[in-house]
Amino acid sequence: MTNQSGRQAPSTEEQEKSRQQTLDQLRQYLNEARDYHRANPSTTKAKASPVNLKLAAAAGLWNESTKVFVRVSEAKGIIAAVEFFKAWNLKPVLVGAEEADLLVDWLAKEKIDLVLGKVHRLPNRDGDPVYAAYTLPAELAKAGVRFCYSMDGAWNQRNLPYQAGHAVGFGLDTLKALQALTLDAAKILGIDNRYGSIEEGKSATLFLSEGDALDMRGNRPTHAFVDGRRVNLDDKQKVLYRKFSEKYDIPAK
Image 1 (spheres, rainbow, N blue to C red):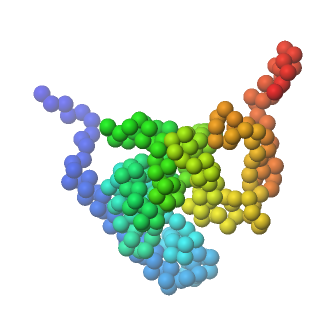
Image 2: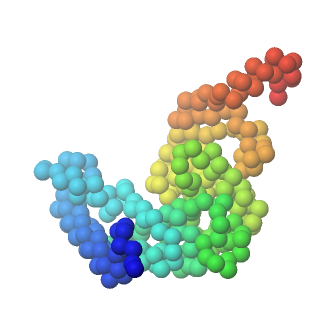
Image 3: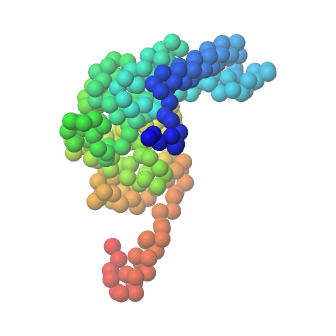
């Protein structure tokens, strides 16, 4: 007796056919977008007539005002993504790239930027050392691969600096870890002309901490500014702390 309930998973051949169809559609779109940009070089400013918004959205890829981000994990996918976009002289930014440790030198040669997945994760492959994800940033930095960090979910962004701090404990230079959080992240996003470092003419977007911002034991932000505007760092936890410190006559820290 066989169980016929549920949906049958597509065969390997069907999956490959679907994959090729998707790639063909992407190739067609990129070819049309490139041709549209060549015919209408002002499309990024929406001055061409008539404007094809679908194609104009990708026109910035050829004047470097826009970047293409590709989420990929496995080494073979990393290579495939980079090789795919070479046909249009584009360098994708790879997001995740958990198996980048297998291709460090190749990524450096190709000058590919990475938005790393979580440092605090389990190894991606059976047999890998438990600290494989912790040492990856140091390996990339040593080879000259530019990278920044990322976290899943807005609620988890508070732990972003600790990703860098953990990598410092496994060989990454402290200043390089900080740079990956700030200037390198801005360069990868293409906004380093305004953000990423404290320089004359750039946006006043920064924060001050009483201790080491990369260490959860010392990260205590006291001031924060976004585009020069001071951010109110008060929250419910601080209000309750002050309330009960006063109630029980405990000196507030």
